Amino acid sequence: MTSGRGGARGVAFEVMRAITGQGAYANLALAEALATAGLEPRDAAQVTDIVAGTCRAMTSLDAVLEAAGGRPLKSLQPAVVDVLRLGAFEVFAARSPAHAVVNAYVELARAVVAERATGVVNAILRRVSTASLDQWAVRIGGDDQEMVDALATCHPRWIVDEYEVLLGRDEALVALAANNQPPVTTLAVIPGRGDVDEMVAAGAQLGRWSPYAVTVSGDPGRWAQVRDGEAVVQDEGSQLVCLALAGAESPPGDWLDPCAGPGGKTALLSGLRGADDGLMVASEIHEHRARMVTLADVLMVADATQPAWPAGHFAKVMADVPCTGLGALRRRPDARWRRQQGDARDLHETQVRLLLGCIDSTMPGGLVAYVTCSPHRLETVDVVRDAMAQRCVEPVAAPELLPGVAHCESPTDARFVQLWPHRHGTDAMFLALLRVPPG
Image (cartoon, rainbow, N blue to C red; front, side, top):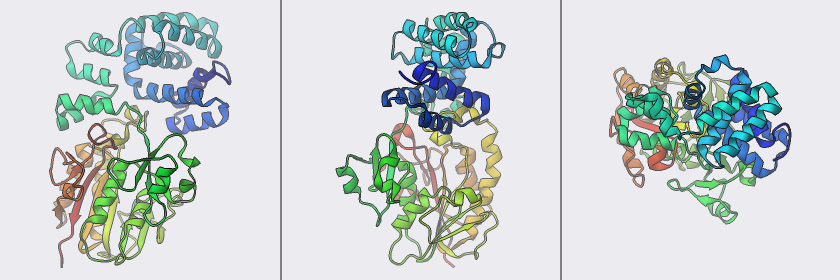
């Protein structure tokens, strides 16, 4: 290990202090730290693994640390708490002998906090190391099975409850475990701009579902195709919802992506259009996100709930609305404790208004794809049903447009698509396709 106090673990500690002490987002704080730390690749990978794992498990780690320490964490110095979180994660990850991990974090506490912190770090981490996370979950949760499940899977209880309603407990536990596995980096090779075979020949791997998907390791920016706009970083679930919309029958005409930033779906849709299709129009309410969209024929800054374009104009509309992001917990390790139970309820009204605006923007016979990166009912089927109660639209059997993707029907309405990390290896994307009746 190299660079700074405590080597790679010291860098991980500084990143955690930025996240918990300054409110920084994990991915941004991690990228900034690694850009300046001067670590060897192996040590940089260790920092990424420790920080991401600690963020994913934060709520469970805190519960274990309080039980092991016999005191609330708020009674300890915040820097000491972060040392303990990192140490507890490594103890449970079991990649090194527990005693070696404890000793390493005692030394880290000495280097980054103070000598006086070493005793409490040593005592608490040694108690933590006496049992696995699953065993601690049972110790803490007792007869409360839902609490045990929440602690063992490292999710807030309200997320566990929603998963168990949708999938049943047995499959929910598998799905929640999949959220704790780091995803591979997937690229969408833009039709007409990039070449999948060329990237595979250079070392990329073919994706599982999308003919335009390849997976890569390391920094995607090292690929010339990414730098040149021939490929974009995009989860395969996002590619599948684009493929479903593009492949559905509709009249010829312009296409619209009204919540376009940062532009990944716009880019893929622009390459999927047929010869009879018109312009690719992109809109984004936030100007800084609009500047990230590069492959639109027309780009504007506008609020899709108050459309700045003629009503009934577009043949296809991609309504990829803002959501909690609960479907992307694999890649956003701190999202599960930043989000609160009421967030889905708070977003619901905005999502309905956006979908209504998109329906009003669609020509007779045209299609709206309602998409969220979330499996939560308040953000998925409930939004669609509320919009259908206010507009005359006809659901299209979306799973039939993804014939090679098994078991992709929504558990609450088989006309809609719900993808899952544990079933499909994708983010948990939801898709409903709605057709405006022909005039």
